[in-house]
Amino acid sequence: MDISMNTRCDRIILFRYGGAARVENSDMFLRQKKSKDTCKTTQNSSRCIPSGLQTLFRLEASFADLILCSRLTFFTNKINYYVSNPLTRQWIALPPAAFEGFAQYVSIGFLCVEDTAHHNKFMVVRLCTGHFNTACKPCSQFKAQVFSSENWLWRTLVVSSPLTLKHYRGRTLLVAYRGMLHWLNRDCIVVYDPLNTPERFSRVIGLPNQIFPLPIYRNNCFGVSQGCLRVAEFSDEWTIDPILDVWELEDYDSGRWILVHKVHLRNLIHNGVLESLESELRCFNVLSLHPENEDVIYLQLFNGVVLLNMKSRIIERFYPINERVMCCWRDAFHLVDQPWPTPVSLLRH
Image (cartoon, rainbow, N blue to C red; front, side, top):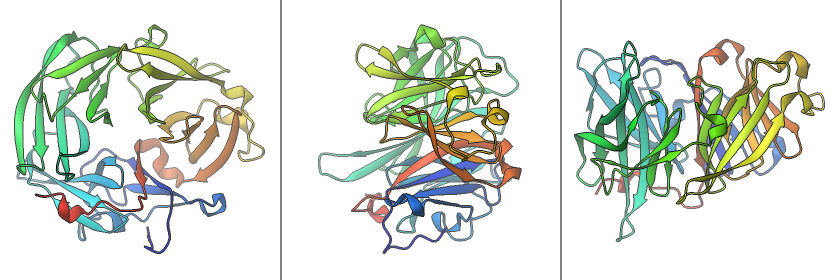
């Protein structure tokens, strides 16, 4: 992706697909400028990562205008992480972390905070959330690897939970919100504050009864939209009338949820953006919430992404993507083009 420093854009969305450690051209970008006519997609991701790693990297997380990517070093049992600002093409390497095999589920969190001296510091969390060949068992302790830019070291910790988790999920992104990380499970959200209480989860927030247990597959998403945590999921997705429900954590302290959108996909208006809505009904998958517009959500199809206005029920845009990669999609990451880009060189104190 060619990012010109003389061209300002509001937001860039990065899509990751492929689960292997060695993934070539594994990320795509949806670039949104202030003028709607200039939105476009591209699959050239080489400008966002360190030179020479273009065929070996994996996107892991984003925060503001920074991305976290990784590269597995084979035969060394080490995994290398890099923090990059793709808009300024700057990056910095972290010390390698121990890698315990592909069978272990690891959820990644990336958190940036400002200290009392107004210095940016960041943390990377690798939360071990189970094993591929082991059934989910009730658990109240989890292993974590925590990196802090303050001391530039990884620490291995055992993190305890105030409640025994019965339906935890592996390899889900840890969402940064209010200076803490949030882990979506099938029946709850687990809150983790690696900065202040690294050896225990801070609290457990129950999900609405209407969506318990949350399906483990990729027909739901979790994120922040206009300053609130939201969970989006499809109900009746295998029927002729699938429904998109979006729940918002209206009161963070009390754990009160509210249903903010309920969209019947059969009633969507596409104005010719899609060839046939009927043929696409069972192909929709929730990809990402819009961080700033509470009425907008991104949905995945086999051959692209649609931008849906849930309030008007109108599919406003369709972004075609290479059809051969769609079945392997995993996550979407948002980047903000800030007036003052985060200087990566100052992240290490």
